[in-house]
Image 1 (tube, helix red, strand yellow):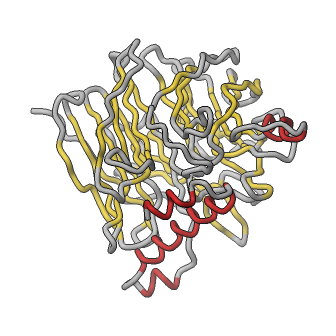
Image 2: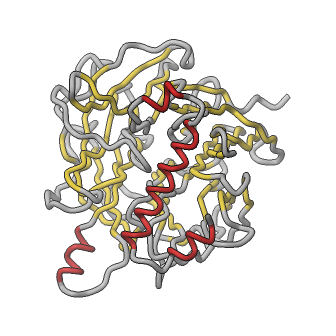
Image 3: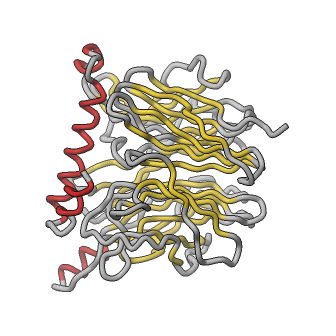
Length: 411
């Protein structure tokens, strides 16, 4: 597989991206073998996010087809996923929703348990769409009509939106945007990748201000990770296209007035490939300001696969640690107090497992565990904070939404 990817690295971007999509589909089909009932079922877009409200209830947001139309749907659980409420539609009227690949609907809570939901509404391929937002201020009994977050209404790339709420209750929504690439190429000039923009709401989602550009030359179809740093400010991490075509990662601190900090290089793999790897990073901060980050490196060699590193405040160099086997992919990371959890997917030819590295002492010591597995299609692992510690939320085609406690407290 690596030799095939290496050979395709110099092929046109469209051909390589098609190869990646076909390869993913083939792996999913292999995972279904031996399960006729699952294989006969229409493949779902399984992208699901989760969050916990002030009462400790777990909520998930996903895409479902109900009454013949597509909706973002919420469910809640008061017992860590043992039982779930009936599905709650976010929209009154169905509209297309992206929930496959690196896309998923997002859910977050405001300071008074306001429910915020954002998602990508696809308009055309590839990744032409709108970043949408809706909110509930009455515990999901009703939702506002969805609005488009960005001021730009051009028929261009708006995709892979991410959302975070800061300690002041401001909502930050970040997305990959094609306006600069489109305009530059229309002038006959070259442009690497797309750009990354954000918008901010300081009134609980009633209005948004933007569009604020963070950086040019961003990888076109990798998810964006957001986390609050030790000062409570949102930081974005994304796959960047460094000159001439190195698909490494960058970070930048966001500000409510649109004056984002300078983008700083965060990984140094020098993976040169004229295509999008469909593998975004994940980011978390400890209370002492240490940045924890995981990402995927597809460059041939011993460092290929899922990587993990910590970056102390003021530090720029990193010492990556490889996690898992050659099939490791799509890692997520969370830090809660002294707990650190890293989870990733790993396919062994028969089933997909969620493997984990877990620490109860801030990363001083670690244990390796398999958290859960499935023989069918599955979403990427999603780690969240909760009163019970860091939880893994993982949606699978065969078993549904699975919730697993990760780190046990140090004795």
